Length: 325
Ligand code: NAD
Ligand code: UDP
Image 1: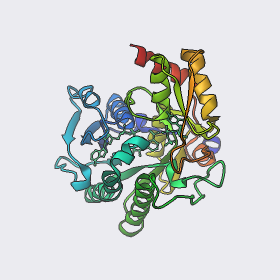
Image 2: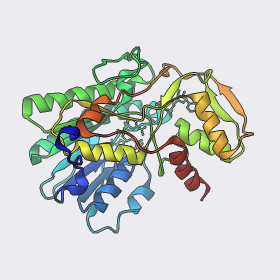
Image 3: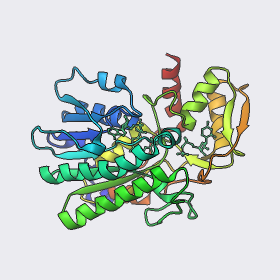
Image 4: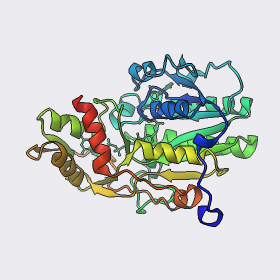
């Protein structure tokens, strides 16, 4: 696309000022979107119930003149009565496996009712609706790497199903509002993303390994450590989101880093950066843990001229610095 036009791909940095409501604004990804959009001159309304987020992420922006915050559970409605919105961005949902398995009903509700409440709000305002979906819609994938055309391999009743099926339903209802009510939608499938402001007790592999090696504990590798993941730095994700908002494309788009690591290789990377002598402790493999995961990002490359630019070692360096400070 860009090759033919020779124009830089637009992002929200170059759009007129927008009014953007973000659910999950006190979470890891939500708080980075709040920051980016405020810095770009937009007005942001954050909504969160803190089920997995942090109050400190709201406090960062509460003095900002273009930021307002509503404490609410979006599964029961989004109590916004302000001026016309340009975007509703639905990022609310527990995302770490220990969090969503602790709150399976709430996770299903925010994927179902929460998504529908966001779609209704967007429809009422004539606003765009942006859904944060996930690589988990591919389940334990039998196709590798995963293109958007792959329908997935999900256990509908396993311990991860509260998250995976909630997101699959969220995608389905988002497409339904687009097809039957004309809502201007975007759907992204986010692959493992990390960065500053993740909760240290979040339970995901990045925070666990950093926390463990900094505190002299062994790194807990689940299973044999041969399962794979790829790790995307938050700024790369935010850039992809921002570009996709400016392109009228309504089917799902993968956003992730295609550099694939086994969990053992990832543990070694953390050891090299923090403590080469750190021990590895092998724990049981959790049920239905995907054996491999790597995004096919051809679509995002063609559509929005996007690919990750931040290496694992430099992204991890930023996070480790903050854990030490
Ligand atoms: P997070 O847990 O840090 O943030 C989610 C936020 O949503 C939290 O602040 C939480 O309190 C809030 N929330 C949850 N349910 C809510 C409800 N009913 N009402 C209001 N607020 C609610 O997680 P994250 O990593 O920032 O993930 C954000 C979004 O991106 C999620 O939708 C997640 O599924 C998606 N995602 C994240 C990743 C990743 O690697 N971080 C990967 C794939 C998809
Ligand atoms: N994992 C691990 N040790 C940990 C936490 C996670 O070996 O302390 C593994 C987990 O089994 C999975 C991968 O790391 O294979 C990524 O887990 P995470 O919870 O970060 O996210 P997922 O991709 O499973 O949603």
